[in-house]
Length: 272
Figure 1: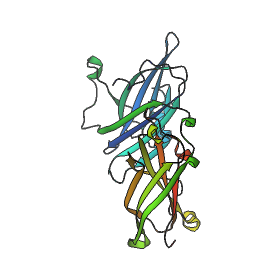
Figure 2: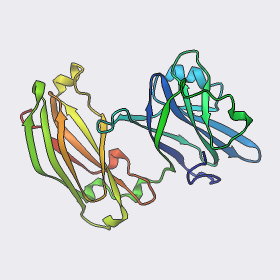
Figure 3: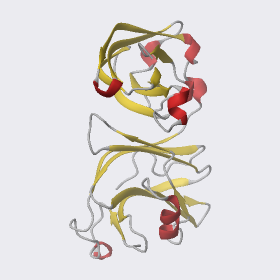
Figure 4: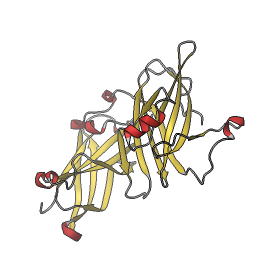
């Protein structure tokens, strides 16, 4: 697999990877990156799939220079079976030369892996068949990070909730429909062609202490190409005190603002 847009480029910052994957059974999907540096330097990195960190390290630490676990994993309610994995690694001064998809089994003691490549030759004849490994890579984005100073601070955005409608669900839950709209108070919003939308469900403190709704889980719910996003029939579990809708601003080069720095709408849950 050719490196998408970064091949042969001297890197001056960290690399960020976002991929959509779907697997079956105990199959796992990661990315193998190869870098060069200096005259003959070579470094290999496995961006592993989410799972047991210790087992993954034991399985692959002898085969790669570095093994990196994803720092964020998100399940998709509207796309069952698909998982978004985000990873990053600092590679200042290196040149990215190769990217491959790696599918492996999440079993202790199993170290065979399957390397997917667009090249054909004798080195590929020992690859395992699809009956042993199954994984689908739906989308892959590999990019260099950029300073978040390129994005307006959240205080420069006006975010509102319109047409808010609450209904009762089962087991004390609530159902929410709302139109989230935002606009830039000053500056040129046309520089930002799309926005990723996340929701964070914040628990009542008493419920969180009992192991109920967990604070800090940012769930991806869609993308907007205009400065508005309609949320329909969002299930809000019992014990949730408020919802935080995060609008992640994205630039035309594919870079996106950090979620912690992004504008947001905080909405109190009716009756909580």
